[in-house]
Amino acid sequence: MPDGATAWFYRTAAGAEIDLVIEQGSRRRIAIEIKRSLAPSVSKGFHLGCEDINATHRFIVYPGVEQYPVANRAIVIPLAETMTALRNTLG
Image (cartoon, rainbow, N blue to C red; front, side, top):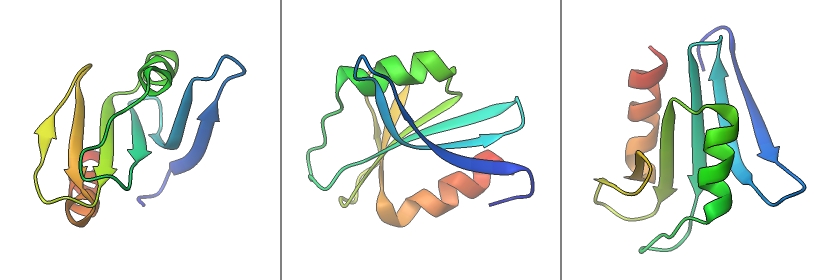
């Protein structure tokens, strides 16, 4: 990760949860949900958490090979492509 970036986990008592948040200053907050399924589905709690933290990017990482958009500006992305996407996003 670049200098100034921090990683943390997000969870509320109401059930909103994000597996990994990478924050770089006040400009970028990347929400990452990690799934094992080849047909990943994301809970309402992930989307609520993204709204809570004002996520600028939303990734659902999975073991498949296709990258595609889903609801609420989230992108399903293969594990193999995740590091490239993060490098491009974090600069």
